Image 1 (cartoon, rainbow, N blue to C red):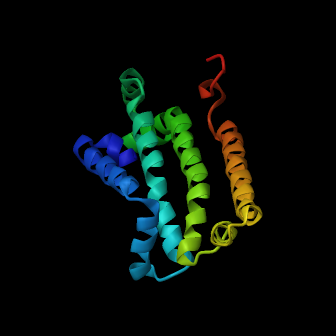
Image 2 (image 1 turned 180 degrees about the vertical axis):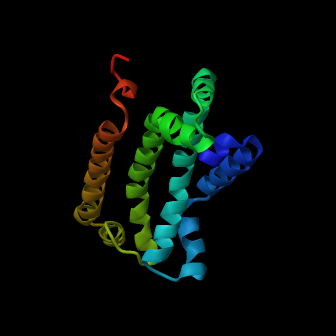
Image 3 (image 1 turned 60 degrees about the vertical axis):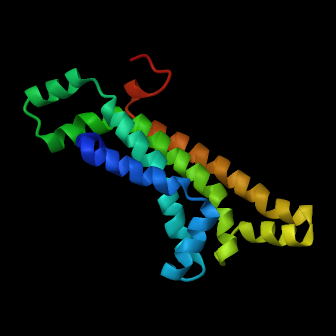
Length: 176
């Protein structure tokens, strides 16, 4: 996301690449990973990682691109190196957007991870699949309810993390 924001041409390639990965159906991506990584957890983890890229990269790009050029110019004028500008000024200003991308990825991945059971990764998807095969709603709920609770917990944890890392004046609803 940082490279995409810094270098326009490279940025378009990066954003295009992560967008293409996102268009691949999740089950197809899981199955595509089997010849590369075998059956079980590793292909599921790689597939989930690839799916998590789009919201994170796009929000990082948008957050950094949305910074007022006057702020960047002021940071440069006081003698900050490009790395220091990024670390001290730009990342803190873009942090809300970056955290939103990470939070979105985490919540989406909790639901998508249940599909990992189709390639032997187990998890909450296993009772869902067994319940579908046996036409047992109770068994389906045995996997679906904890997965939904986990998604809500991830959402809540990232809300707390956002409060901890985003500077007070940049938080939603704060008087800046």
